[in-house]
Length: 342
Ligand SMILES: [Zn+2]
Image (cartoon, rainbow, N blue to C red; front, side, top):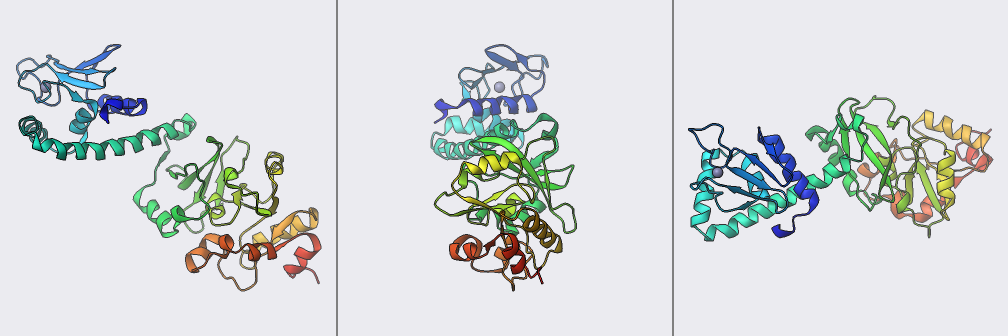
């Protein structure tokens, strides 16, 4: 397994070495530094007997008494320098490992676990590297309290999550959950979702970027409609739900959606609860009489789809095609359904 360390892992290992070890002499094929495993020479503080070899991702210490005298893998070195175990204990462990082959299996399992963690972190780093540099500093993995909000809202088990990877970040400057939008694997747009009640607006899109269509690759053309919601964290609950980052479609979005067989339907928050949503719908129905819109049935008290799903056992918005189709209207008929006409 460790003979086939992939390039991402290798970069990750090298990052960890750079982060944790000072005064590295970097050559093209190897890096030389004071050995962190044995502590290197105590008499000569300038002695550097640790060598990390880039091509083989292996580490060797030329101090004869060192547990790493005889190569260890880059993963082992990183496990050593990054875990919180005191160095002396770890050094003993390495020594006993060499003397007690029966410990090796146990150690390999621990290593494999670490390897999986590293693979995940390397993947995340790679994804982060697609994000514009000026934003990377403020985007972090979800802090505990925010992860709890996401968990309470059951987002990660939503039935219409993008299939090719879905990961959330937190923007520490803006105090919002960041949802990257990908289409055909590319990061095309992102949206920040408010985390506190009263934090306005609910969704905020990337500045200086053309709005794209979130969840475009998930559209099922066997279904008659594609529901266009404002926000990604609502769209993931709806059959053929996509997010468009607003209440109308841009030219680019119209163009993208026209390549699919489904008819676009604007779906806003509950028009019986949210007066702003009702006003928007009214505007659309009056000014674009052919534009299909979704009118919520009377009797639902939740303000949006996510709240509805948390409170109800069945998710009509995903599982009941007939329900969805029965609530699609346009023009005067839609206004009537909203009881806006006299
Ligand atoms: Zn050493």
